[in-house]
Length: 52
View 1 (cartoon, one colour):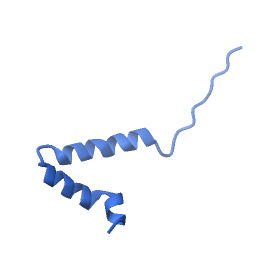
View 2 (view 1 turned 120 degrees about the horizontal axis):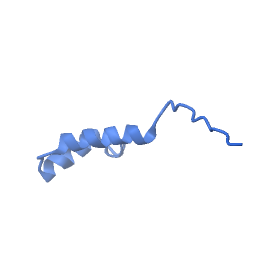
View 3 (view 1 turned 30 degrees about the vertical axis):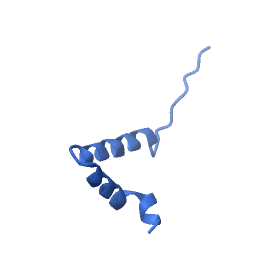
View 4 (view 1 turned 180 degrees about the vertical axis):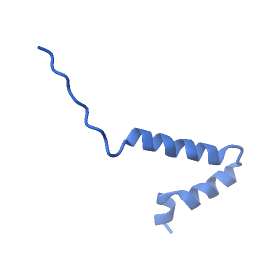
């Protein structure tokens, strides 16, 4: 007798969330120079913000 496993609906989908973040960053960085990318990272990166 086969049983069906019900998949509980996720409240937070990590893969989906990080894919959306990655796509937003990619759109923000298109056509930027290295210096502009570094400035973007300084302004938007948690790691850089905590090192100030």
